[in-house]
Image 1 (cartoon, helix red, strand yellow):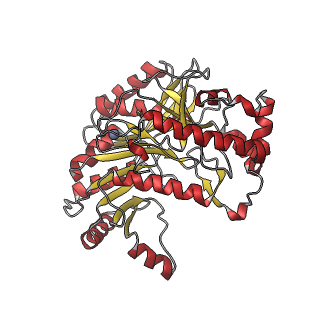
Image 2 (cartoon, helix red, strand yellow):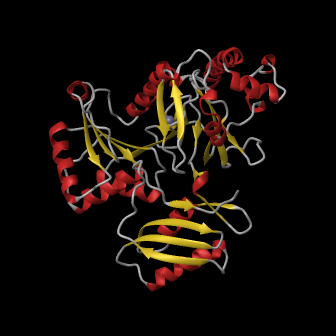
Image 3 (cartoon, protein in one colour):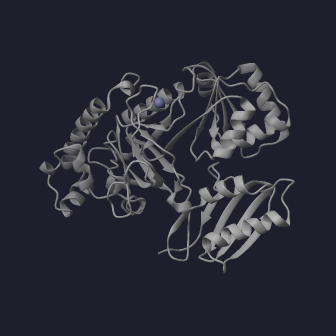
Length: 421
Ligand SMILES: [Zn+2]
């Protein structure tokens, strides 16, 4: 993977094509679910003649995976020989995912490759700001942890002055080179480090993962730690999709083992720079293949080359989970996260905000206020929302002290509870 990242796009596509052919042949022989699915669409084994033919295949939704369950497993794979995990999912609907050991190792390799883009090297200690961290329990696990991959944790489910000070102390002892965490957890840590005037946390690289990194949060983290943040994007079902390099100019797509498409509502391909629904084919998980899997995120493909010299093509900003889009009365969707970005930059005194949409015309804004927030800012905020969703909407403003994390440790800033079914 260290080598292939610098391959030309043409050479990378040759790898994709060879892996796709291999998976395709495997599926026709060993996976009843897909074989029936393809036959039902009028497809035959000989119908895949080039990479482009992927677009002939039906898109797989989360709903289908939930309803089909273990039917997606290929013949010859037994659940207890596979690695199993449940995806949390911000929508609260869990999926059971099974992968082979080989696939898991490849995913880990891909993550380690990206970790190195931050300046970190394997074996160097890592400081993680994480909700519900999985701490080693057995003596053996602790030993491995300490020798192979030393970690220190800040449990972001309960960030206090004391826990941040303890984290800073542990940092002085183990001297991690990488600071790693959910975007919002890193932001909360940066704020606290700034308030407490802690100087000891000096990472070489900062890696933001598992949730969207908002521009204002990125700015605060970079200012406090005096380092650029490296962002990455993925989902639990297919692991890392796009990774920012040291140039911080878009995310390189991991196309050696993934086919990543950006679709318009009608299923055609979005143009470079045009937001599209992200659909991913995982070329390596034969146990439970994900073919044209709809991730339910919206992102953009970029057609420029990165100055770092890597051949992996670029994708741009992910605009958010489809589930976190808000709905206007005409049925169109608005990325909640964009509204938050706009209001946070245009209206003074809002530190953080969470939007909850209960129905087409009923909203609640949970606001963590700064000192400047008063009646005039509240008025500005209301009229901004009325301008987008209509003058007759009901908006409730609620001041809160912090936005609480979900059980998974992630944060949601835009929650749409409108039943569109
Ligand atoms: Zn690059």
